[in-house]
Image (cartoon, rainbow, N blue to C red; front, side, top):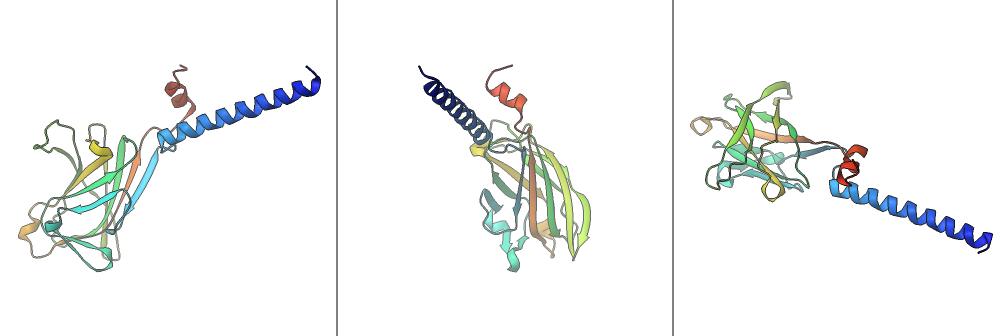
Length: 193
């Protein structure tokens, strides 16, 4: 074998090795689908990819400017994601003259189709902007139901149906957190530890 053939084979080996390594990294990133570990979804009451809007339909009224009026509590929101997450921070922009908005939570795993359980957490008020209240809640998704790759959330406003003034929702922002893709996680996936 001549030096020229040896150099060609050596260069070809390096190119193939780099391509295989690159393909492996792309595969792992796609398999994780959220390499940063953070996924933010903003739903402004219009069609959004990955969101099944507020429902059931008979409990809400669509208003102008993509706002939704909640007439009867509770209402639900489903969010479809490629992977499970550990936690979610939720920010809700709303008008609530009757001060009925109370808590929000994620549906828990309980093994029974007819018995829904939710981990409800009280909102913390952040600020008021242009007549809209902005509130925050942080939820653990550790025991949350992830059937069909979706989390189901409940918004609770007890006694809302007995009030003349209803709850209006402008938008909701959900920021999901999980362990980011890292070298230690790649080693764990490849069983190199």
